[in-house]
Figure 1: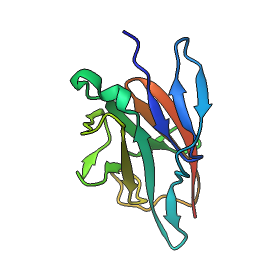
Figure 2: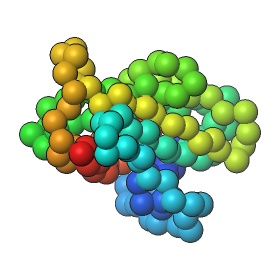
Figure 3: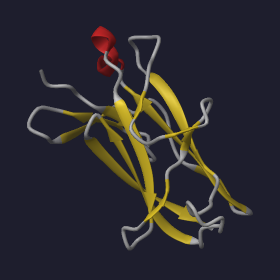
Figure 4: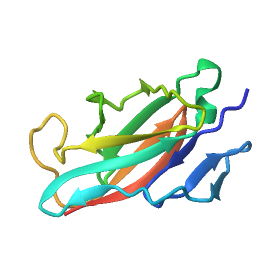
Length: 139
């Protein structure tokens, strides 16, 4: 059975995984951009998951990781409302229409206690093995 991963990322486009591995953009639901404060490196990364992934009780496994431009892991954000790291986390959704989620990164490099340097970072959202990648700027 082929599962389709849908997510809304920084540009607000629905990205739909279609058979054959290509990606197709559909009508945006609304702008979904990471929100950061120029005086605070913390940021929120919103994303949506299609209701199709929750059919028949399936719980899609989601991971979100933030990397620097050298492809070194910087942080694993937490899922808002649960305070659980988004690291192979099985999500649930009470509706067949899909659900919106929000990840939070405090702006600190994992396991160091140091704030991330200003610059460009890459975040990668993985939903049931499908990868979606966007950049984020920390000021």
